[in-house]
Image 1 (spheres, rainbow, N blue to C red):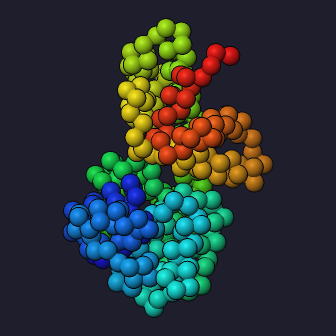
Image 2: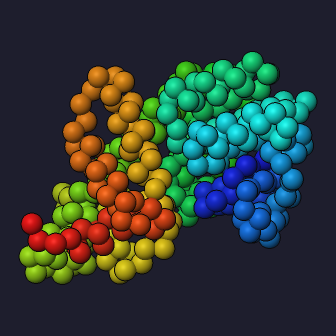
Image 3: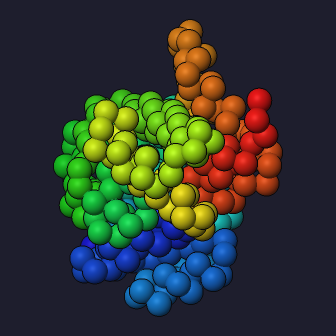
Amino acid sequence: MRVGIIGVGNMGLAMAGRLIEQGWQVMVRDIEPARERMAEGLGARVCASPAAVAAVADRVVICVVDARQAESVLFDPHEGVASQENKPCIVLCPTIAPDQTESIARRLAAVGLPCVDAPMSGGPLRARAGRMSLMVACDDALFERHSALLRALADPVFRVGPRAGDGARTKLVNNLLAAINLAGAAQALALAERVGLDPGRTLAVIEQSSGQSWICSDRLPRAIAGDLAPRAHTSLLDKDVRLALGMAAAAGFDVSVGAAAAALFARACDNSMASLDDACLFDMLRKAKPA
């Protein structure tokens, strides 16, 4: 029942709180001392390095932002998880490219560390309640051995197959559609406002009609209210949709609708909105000059 979490941002902190409530012993490490203090306030034990987390944990959840950070916390020769003698299972949760996931899994296997490819979706509120989703790819024996942790963190847990990288592929397909849905909803409601409709009333119609999507219903009410405090940073979905486009290009598949959505997220980041909630697309579009 000892689990480490490396990276206690919005999602990692929510996961730590969930596991502590479920009776797990949780060790954490983050580059931001303030985040570590928040985790400590929930009952987690703060460790001095990723290696120190791995030395006392049976499983280590990697909940950093991207592949560069994941490789750093795992393979730093002095402080990385792989630098010490204990061999915990690594649960890899960031949204990264499938080939990066495959590479990390191979490098971990080479030093005796099993890896579960398990990107997550759902946001911090659902993570705190254990209702986020995990898209899990690993062999059957590894899945069974660590299913208690996976099911403590998520409901549903989707078993997508045994091949490392398929969790990442599934997550990128999901996030590509999420980006398309959010970009389309933001643009449609900005149009509604431009033609004289009340965006809140229009959204109420959409939520009970054929235009409804989960991400629209989750994001747009707070965007309409002007609440852009980050629950999911714009920079993250910008990164994810670019990774999805790269995966599509490698497969020789045209995703022109996704490319249009990607352009809007890139535009928001270029307009100093990267650290805002990704619902800021509505604010950007409603303020756009008439064509």
